[in-house]
Length: 307
Image (cartoon, rainbow, N blue to C red):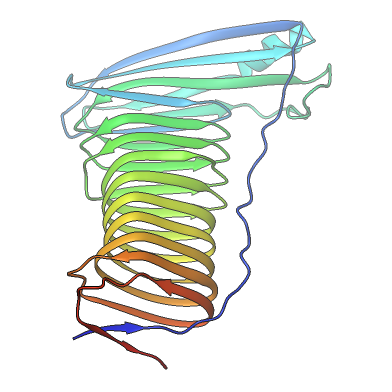
């Protein structure tokens, strides 16, 4: 006999905090330089990119080569300062057959380079375009900018603060995604791994076995096989899921369709399961001050146990 545990009340929801972007305006002078490096690597090598204040765009291919192109652009109203800042930004490379590492280096100055609009200050941007083997591992770190990656069969370790990630198919079961203050991020396929998110919003189209830790975040899965979550403040949405377990406080939970089982601990939030499939195994909900709605199938035998 299937059992449904239900305990209700409702509560408030703390909305996602979103980050605004700066409009940096127009400047009298613009200078740029391009750095290009190419390395031969093994099929199982790793590639690490460490950047900030720009975008990191990665395309994988079937060649055992890594090609990195870095475009550095500086803008400002004082030409000497614009040129000086361009010279102050470099990229350190470390390379072997088994590992390639590229790290952005910005020389510190006494001026405040981030006071946009001042004639004495300089705006700059550092953009990476990377081609790498699809079988390699990738560790991509970028702050104040976006990360894009089309496909990867190796492990992905993605770290992005104050930006956005756009990822295609991650075939490994050992991926790591760490995002803070990111908005409208997307992943096509994530076979497995861990997601840590704060003050962010993301959507995954197709997921396998996922562990999610998120606070003040809007998390959405179109399809997922297994999810274990620990989330406070924000929302968790699943369109089609098999097995879900987790805990959350002040969390809005909406599951459209569940085919197997649900186990939830919740305080001060809301839980809505639109449709339990006919052959679902069991639903267990332990909650306080939480509104609960469950759409149970008409043609299945089950019972409710209320405490």
